[in-house]
Length: 423
Image 1 (cartoon, one colour):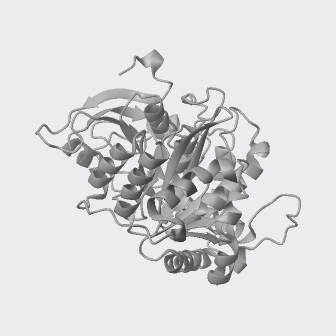
Image 2 (cartoon, one colour):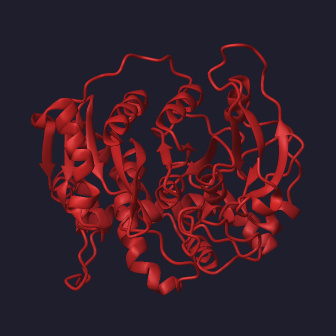
Image 3 (cartoon, helix red, strand yellow):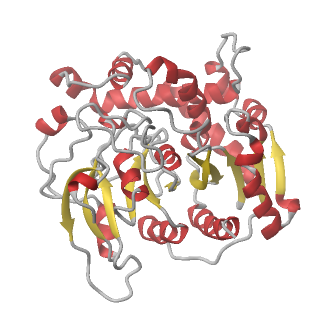
């Protein structure tokens, strides 16, 4: 382990939670860190904000996910910095400092699980856990050049985890190595190991790649070539995902924008999907934390303060439609992918933004990011962000999405693909 001065600003506090000691445990000798959203008995769960920490008591028990990892032989070495109240994908925290991106020191690390991603990317721990509601594992994984896994919604217990928005909250994890990613997944998902299954199809969402500033040949081609080599070219399919979603998710019409977007490339149906996701997220966030915010009036940083204010003004209007969108998208993507199909999309629209970029300048980037992130977010499907090295000295990643409940399949697939990509 590095000293405090060399920890990239990733940690809120360091401590040791000893593992269960027995031979042959799957995570023996591995170290991990946890986002400051998970309860640990005897510690205050600070939720990225000093006013929250000041007004909450120490936890009386430890989150089951943390206990499972300790029981599998891993050692917890501390809690990591996160964006305030988990309400950002940027990774900047005005109170506790911004963890330093180990791939690009002048760029944001991504949030809200910023410290957890940095701790893995900087090789301070073997793996870490975070949460992903709107993208808070997938985004920092991409920005820090590591693997990040968002499981199927509801597949992992969120007990002992401060809620953000229950319709989307998941417990996710980070690793530098796909084998460790898969081992950790086996423990967290509490599923028996199964033999790898050959994917039935790889669907390339052509329009989604146009949301990225990275050329298609750079971003998708390494994976496409690997898929052809391992499974043959006949499993590769092309799809205009926006059109498919528009046709098969009729409730989205309530969220389709009338604005003229000719100047900026976007995918109207996925923008609408993002709007539905963020509305429901605001509504549930308000129900979870509105009373505390109104009573305490916490000091919140730029961007987050505005989003929290928007959430507090949210009413129940169109919320039932959001739930309809969730159901319809789940069914539509299940029909598209089948049991063992995979959807290939960019994780994010481009490289990590520079530190302290003006909030208004980030709006187009954020809008495109949430168009991509809402696909798994709203459907509840599982998604993995895979690092593809560096492009123009900045980290590059791609994502694979599989049906709800296909988490084990997706973890095995990443192991097979990555070994071949690296050859």
